[in-house]
Each structure stands twice: as C-alpha cells, then as structure tokens.
Image 1 (tube, rainbow, N blue to C red):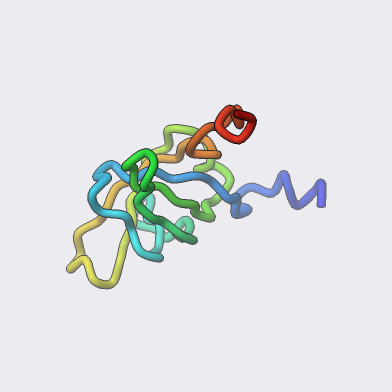
Image 2: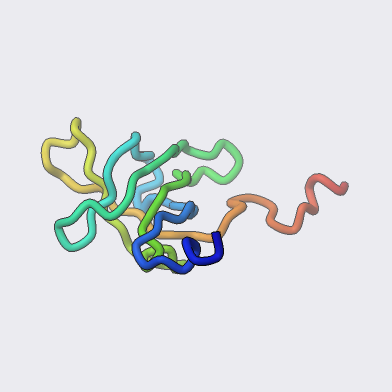
Length: 100
C-alpha cells in the first residue's frame, strides 16, 4: 500500500467546486490536455452554501488544491464544464456546528 500510494498517476479522491454554481456536473470524465485524467464521482448543489460541490477521482498529480479541471458530459454538446480542486469537508471543517 505504501508503494501504491506513491505511484504517479494513481487516482486520488478530491473535493471539487464548479466555477458555475448554478450547474452541478453529472457523472463525467475529467479532461486535462485533451486526455481523460479522472472521473466525477458525485456532485450536488449544497443547500447550505449554495455552491455546486462534489468529489472526483483524479490522477495524483492533479490532486493539488486549486487545480482547474474540465468536465465532459455526454449531454453537453461538446461544451466542457469547469471546476477546481478544493479542500474537504466543504462545510464547517472545524466541526463547530456539530459541537454547539
């Protein structure tokens, strides 16, 4: 497992936020440099924050916070959606809401 963790190109689970919060992506391929480099696992619009957020599996070199990704969906007529890698959890990372 330690060796696999260091493998370049290994898929890692990351948080994503859409650049357009009105349009959460459906499951789709993540495109970087015209190549499939990962997949959207799930994405929804958060009722609490109003942001379109979700999780994706991306190649390890794309897992850095702030990395911009393009998402291809079959129903988008060739238009790519854009998202950025963001830290998780998306809401209340210190757990303040749960403690009060």
